[in-house]
Structures are given as structure tokens and as C-alpha cells.
Image (cartoon, rainbow over the protein chains, first blue to last red):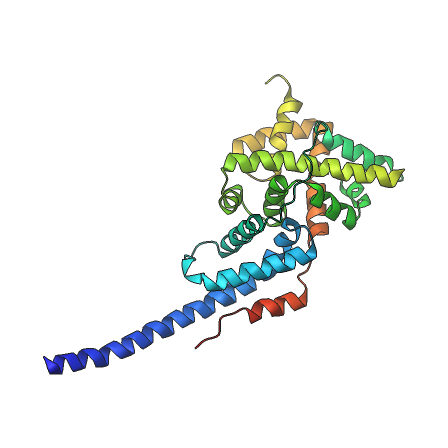
Length: 203
Length: 76
């Protein structure tokens, strides 16, 4: 018995050491994979947050939490979606989602309203591909930030982050149908905001 | 379907999001082939999306990259 016990203890130590070494390797790989996605995470965070400063802070908090709870990530699943789920939850928890007053104007007929506005001020340029170039980068960033959060989060995830409806639904913990309806309405609100900036510049 | 253009408009978002079935996509494209206003509308929407995406893409500040790397948990 004493002999067997000694053997057990001798065997147990390298096993434990091997387990720890394997875990350390997994963790390093997780951290490297997560860091490799940071550009893409930031691109989405920049417009989910209200400012560059908020985005910066939010991304740091997201990575700090991800590095602490890396064991909860299931290898083989979508790490970018997992990181953004942490990020959107943190954004809600920290109460950073200041909502604007609800939008009252009708949203119908936005598509062509925006197009007509842009073509009108466009020095004869009416080509659908070129007329959008009349919007400045600042117009677009300002219009996006004017879209209320519930709608903006979906637009940012799907249109800027290239997430599927299903991924966006999981990240935001809402049904896929809600993703689709918010996306539809959100894009209309965005177009209205863009049309307003086009009107301001044209006058 | 009474109004093909209204139906085509309903299909616009899912068409541009690439979530229509092949049959729905063919149907939308058949209408787009023969309807100039709808085609222009789709084209405008598509270029707007591409443009918004490009305009909204901001590079991560290099200092942030360093800060994130510093958050890694050191090996014991």
C-alpha cells in the first residue's frame, strides 16, 4: 500500500503540471485570438458607444472581462460574437445608452427622399453610385449616432460588423424577427438623418 | 400580388442582406430587369450601404492596442 501510494503521488504531480501547462497554452491562444480581433471589435464598438472615449473604455473593459472569464468561451464557436456580447452587455450595464427623444416624424418614402435631396444638390450628378458621395464622413458618423440605440446596435452589428441576423440576435439577446424589424426601421431612421444633413448643407 | 413595385420594395432589404431563397431572388431580379425605378432604388440603397460602411470604419488607435495587450494575464 505504501509503495502504491508513493507511485500515485509521483504520477499525480506531472499530471497536474501537464494539466496546468495545457491550460496555460489554451489561455495564451485564447488571448492571442481575442487580440487579433480587436480591430474588428473596435470598429463596431466605436458606433455602439457614444464617443471615441467611451468606445476606448468599453473595449478595454470588454477585454479585461474576456481575459478573466476566458474559460466560459467554448472553443470552435464565434469568438468575435462572444466578445461583442460582453461589450453590448457592458454598455447596457453601465447605463451609457442615453436615449434621445422618440422619433415622431413618419419614416415613409425615405429612400427616394434622400436620393432626391442628394441629386438636387449634386451639380447634375444623378448616378445612384455617385450621388452618395455627396455625404461627408462626418455626416454619416453624426447620422449614425443620432439613431436610437436599439436600432443603431442592430445596424452597426449587421451593416458594419458583418454579423448575420442570427449572430446579432444572440449578441443582443433578442429574437431574429426583432433584429429584422429593428434593422428595417433603423436603416430608415438613418436615411432620414442623412437626408436632414443633406438639406442643411444644401441651403 | 397586386403591386409588383410594392412587393419588390419589401424584398429589397432581404435581397441586399442576401437572405432571400433562390426562387425569391430570381423573382426580385425578374422585376428589377424590367422596372427602372425599382432598379435605381436598389442601386442607390446598395451604394449607400457600401458608402456608410466605408465612412463609418474607424481605425483603432494604436495606444488602445497596447493597452489591450497589457490586460493579458501574466503566466505564473
